[in-house]
Length: 327
Image 1 (cartoon, rainbow, N blue to C red):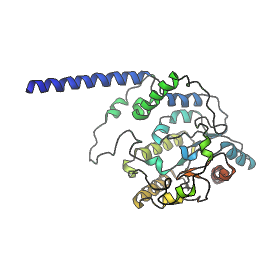
Image 2 (cartoon, rainbow, N blue to C red; image 1 turned 180 degrees about the vertical axis):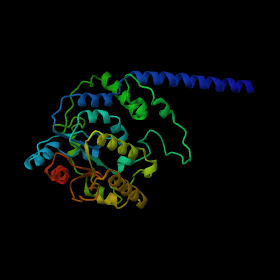
Image 3 (cartoon, rainbow, N blue to C red; image 1 turned 135 degrees about the vertical axis):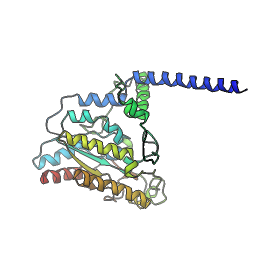
Image 4 (cartoon, rainbow, N blue to C red; image 1 turned 90 degrees about the vertical axis):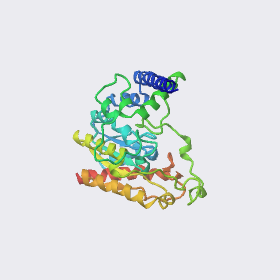
């Protein structure tokens, strides 16, 4: 009986090892679609005087042409690129750091949300265990190796795998080389979305409503938050390449903010204070600034392609102008 159990366990281990090896080999030999997309953009010859805007979907409504026009009216002629991308977290952005630095933008302005630092479901691992000594992880061991094609597999296995599978289906459907419509010029990664024009009904944004009822995920404290650590590494990388970095917090609906657990608010504010102290910069706080009715899609997205939200783009331009005057 005991021998039979040992044989079964041994077979399961062998089967699992073979399956894992086949999966890892297959994924590592296929390209990472999203990384390729970014690499293709950054290898272009872009204008010398340029500004990059970063952020996730909460920055979708920012029109880089409005930003550049406001700057131009004040005598600052920059080409502004909005390089935001939906669900693109700080870890994902960090692995494109060398590509960003290679273009030597004058300024990088980054919009962060509460969601930027959500921990469950967005990071490569779950909450770390408190200990005096941390053993090296498998990821740390693998970091010494370089994969020839899927460069993101080790840096961020979850997203690299998702991107690779997405790449397979994009290619299968003949959409890999398809030119997708973009919301604004100089916005290569966001895709046109007509739903972004439609505001939510006010009842859905009330406390307890379908769209403003707090259902946020936990933000781990600074010392345990991978996304915050990745953001800081990115800023250090950009500063080492003499690229100025500006941070702003993106708008959130007031009814959602009032429901945030106090601890989560304190962690988020602590993160912003930490950035200001470590990097000697000012974080421009917009997350509780706009309560205008009729501009919200949900608790953290405002409508786009509408004059009602041009103020968002103009606000970014004002932040840039403020920083330029202080330099």
